[in-house]
Length: 594
Image (cartoon, rainbow, N blue to C red; front, top):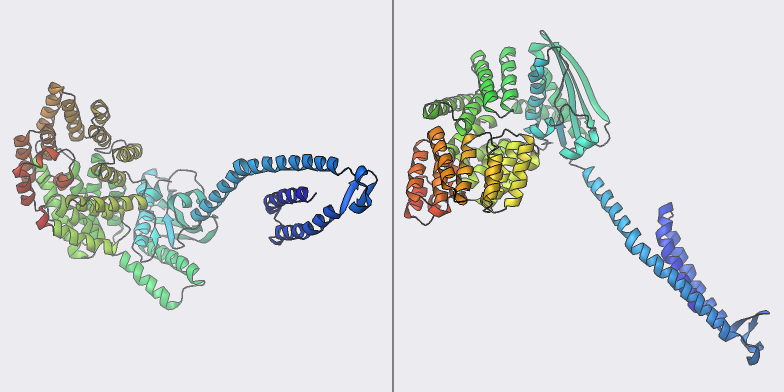
């Protein structure tokens, strides 16, 4: 009987510990059951020792004659009962281990993940694209621009974490809930709104909500003359910063804090204009430059040019104008060397105009760092410019990408990869950020990961230059030549497509096809794609032609040369004495980079 009691008590304890919490039982109840069972064991043991169960009921052992004792039969029945209880116990143990426990762990993991997702930094915010409610749907640039300018200002406020523009604007036109947006962007607050523009009157509605609940924390409607839109933007930015800081301090901002916030917002707004017409042109420029295509970069440049003509002291417009010229130097092939030189000269002039007006303007410093890295090969100068820019705007994905580009130029693969990962973390749906990350992964030998990133680039922007060709490069480096050629054929940029196709066909020993692709590359891009031509020759182990085209790329200030030290198509050149000499000419020898 004592044995049966022990087995039954153990089974009861296990069931109680599992079932009672499901009903919200207090913690003391399972403990009380265990204590009572322990207390009850001693009387049970004594009882089973002193008494015997007979057909006439319970009798003391000494009162039952031996010949009338049924203890052996009772023992056998008890054994069968114990076995039955043990079977139940084993069955319960199996169910608990293989069914209930995995569910509990999954549930706990889900609760933990939910808890983590629901508790981002309280000083984090995403500015979503404001809805365009104007009758003129062509005014979308204006509503986008208002929200983007607000985002840019908040991004420069110390202590705030602001979701990057590309990721925040990816929810435009989608019916996502506040909770979904907050979770995907990792922010605690959302800024939403709408803009209605009619003639010289603009109506702006803005609201701040908690992402995890959708609860509105602040909202305001503004109906102003168009010339007063700047004051509205400033007021909205200050109010949002006050609201976020007030939640952390548990009350409204005091006058001193308000004055500090106003100063921070004014500092973040530097480089602007008071001209309504120049401001509208600037917003159009930002709208088009974010499309990242050659045609729309031309439209952005025209808009920025109008802005600086309307207000020559508009530093942000000069910085935007510089960035359009740099984009053409990096990607466009139309106009050949003459067109490249014109764009580079215009970019330099625009950067200097912007920095003369605002020496600490991150947007202008970004453009200068690109010129220093991609065309001047001034590695130390670029590093100094980027340090200054990142100190002013540490959350700017474009600056982080540029820092990764510079690290790659210096041969610092790990640092380059880290910068690019940070850029993607801040702006996960930015195709250019993912392209930089994919390249950094490929350089470090992570071809499968790189391929996955290039696939995301294609998904985000199918016309992005070197996206499909990037997929092809990862296959090429794994000697999967047919897959490489097929993938690259889809690329929008001829120079990228022809580079990979020529190398892949060479790897397959289909020399005539490789020669055809190379000949087309030389015919079409010799003035703007000399570096890619050098890569083909380097991959072929044709060292003389490779160095000849590398030197031509240097003379033409080819934007591909910053990738020289980490280029995965040029290892055949490394054992040639001309390799170290060329690195020294470029200022990329180890001792020159110290």
